[in-house]
Image 1 (tube, helix red, strand yellow):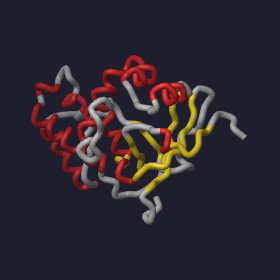
Image 2 (cartoon, rainbow, N blue to C red):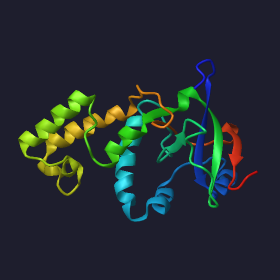
Image 3 (tube, rainbow, N blue to C red):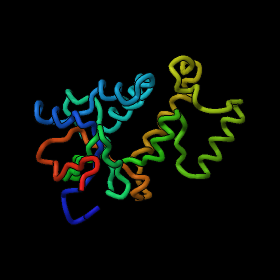
Image 4 (spheres, rainbow, N blue to C red):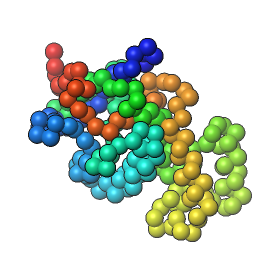
Length: 196
């Protein structure tokens, strides 16, 4: 990241149909139907977690009410998702103030309904706490079917998820970025599959 500039280069892979969306609507946004196509039978599970992310992220970078979900981006060309036959990569130039950075490794904790520890000592303490209470894991604390049995544990786990936005280890393989939409003026280049 260039600290002197107000702009940051990001890379995002999107379905090739996004080109039509850009032409027709003048903007690319992530919608529920996009998630449905990508995640199929686990869409409801993903949407639940994305909604949590959206509620937390929009406190840092406000969004308009008609935006449903963020656009996920890589912060480096080396670690970007590559174009495929059905997907293109947009190389974007984005205002720093429009970017929500997060730790992708910590996001994996959220995806798996786990507590995000502050550090190794906190992780050990939390594991001891679960053991003392007789819990084998924290997954059932968040699950809609069982969460009502564990309100305190659920709150502790979900409160820890805000640590996903703590990007203290700036690593191109760990840190990711989100923006709310792709506008034409942000697009520097579009990379296609087998592009020479």
